[in-house]
Image (spheres, rainbow over the protein chains, first blue to last red):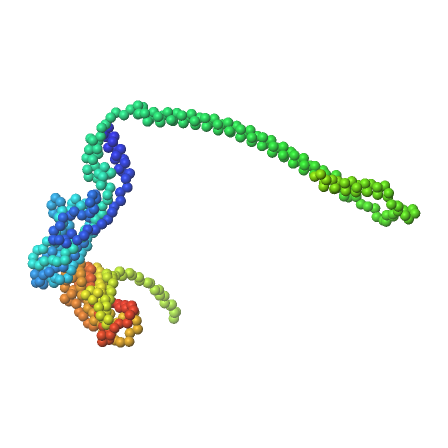
Length: 287
Length: 154
């Protein structure tokens, strides 16, 4: 069981994104010519030194010999960084400044730093600055297997945890989920049935539409044939021509008088009386 | 006698010379105005000293010539004379062996010349002071002067 937990954590950790941050120190030689290497933000891990810059002003007589060493001890012996300026026979008073690119050496290798002088003379206005890069991925040691203390943290966590045998089928939550899933399956089945029925109805509707379209086609074809045949039926009338010549008046008024139509006058008068009676009747409805 | 024509061709020769002396402005200068009649880059006068850096990758091949200004490049209209003074000094080096540059420098007029006998970087700072007329106030406006830095092959 312990191995399983460790493996899972390792997989999770390898998917984590690691991004470096960069910074520079203040003047490490501001209070003296020796200094410790407690640099970088608190809790930062994987800190690597990638640059050293220093400046100082030598104070010496021209004829004096003087060597100035700016260096850091290496943990385990020797020096991890060392730069020497030979001022022997040279004039002091002018500041010297130098910069060095360091190949990302881990802070764990860097011992105390110092400005050491051999010979006669001194240095003033010393300024030593380190540039570095780091990441914060290891503030929690278990976040990355490469972090120091990763294994200890994992084992410590497991030691504090109470390991119990777990039966998922006895878990009420899981049983509830299984029941809910069964109900959900039943609902899904019902929905499927409804979908099948709806599909049948749709097919029937579509078949009715097809019949209507077919009927409409037949009707439109019949109308088209009727229009075509009517054209043929009417054409003979259009083609008739009147015979040429003059057509004489055949109706003649015998005595030259046209008498009034008394019968028509009576009918007209009766209609007028009736109309007047109807018009007046609408005003008598309120009586 | 048969005449034989002469044939000729021009063959180009090309080459590229990369500079081994690079001049960079490290700090732009600023005039202070401690008196109405005085402009100065000295920090004591409220100014900023201009600094120029020479990066030399070939030792003993170049001379550094730094000339302090003797006139304003831009200024309001001036009706009186301006008296200029200036100086240039080594302010910083990247090698202890360059410490002798300052003692060996040669000054003529407003120009200071340094023999760059070592490879590396050298910073030169220049001071410039302008005094207008005889205790005459500078007219208000913007004043600009130029420090000329040159790298001359020996």
